[in-house]
Length: 109
Image (cartoon, rainbow, N blue to C red; front, side, top):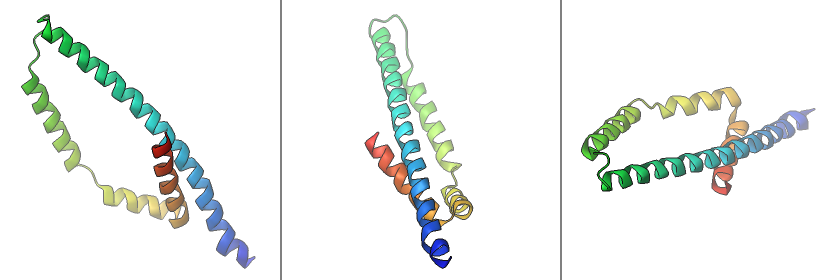
């Protein structure tokens, strides 16, 4: 009874959340790769059209918009609150397994 509560439950939570984290990290890496390729193709197409002077692109305004969006996004993130909520809701073994599985899955993806 004590062995079950002390060893097996945390081990099961660690392993189960590790598998879920691996799958989430693997899938996220694949999706991000597709999104990055699509954005790259779009930018190359826009640059080619601008080089042929079919369109006029105001790159400085695009850069300013991206910079302001990045600043707003960075200012609104509350990473401490997010990690605190995950640790409290899942427990330490499950959070550790999820984190390690996610990192490993993201690297392998």
